[in-house]
Amino acid sequence: MVAATPGLKPVMTRDSDKFIHLRGRTAIARNAKADLFISVHSDAFRVTSARGASVFCLSQHGATSEAARWMANRENEADFVGGASISDHDQDVASVLLDLSQTKTLENSLDFGHRVLGQIGDITDLHSRRVQQAGFVVLKSPDIPSILVESAFISNPQEEARLRTAAYQKEIARSILDGINTYYAERAPEGTRYAML
Image (cartoon, rainbow, N blue to C red; front, side, top):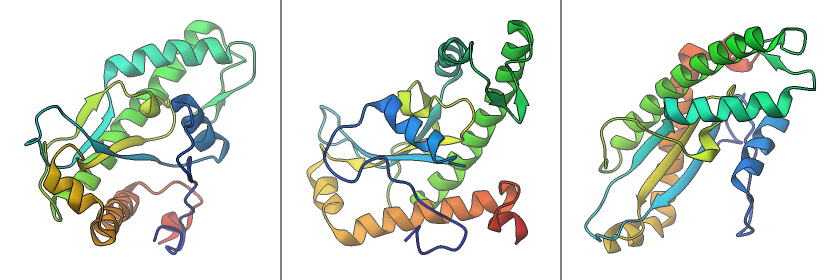
């Protein structure tokens, strides 16, 4: 569905049940020069009546701890934050540049998550009507707007049955794609097909 949309090129971090470490998934996105990162899951809880879809983006606490890790990993190599090389600046300036980039990325992640949540809310119940924030490792990219979609509760027998249907899987995929389209209508990356529309 996404691949059939002009201007979009999906890059899957997994195409089988083979486990890929969480940081490896964000590395795949970074190597592909991704403009967005979307992680799709099914939720589970010990109470089988829990139900509904959710959308998460990174919390400020998670962003702060990842910033320190990212800075340490990049200390001795040239890297770029918002197009500016941080290797040419002292650590204080580099830290400020990273913080500015990360703040903008979090703002964009929240906006993107809100748009996807609105689309998902049109097709299913929501566990929360707000974009939730947490320190999920896959959301900790300082420069790629990232969301995690919990499509339903697999621990709820009715939702598990629905998750198994191709029709519901397509509805979830379509709602995420519609969220991408509404997000890119206002925030298309420069030089992309969306930016030219």
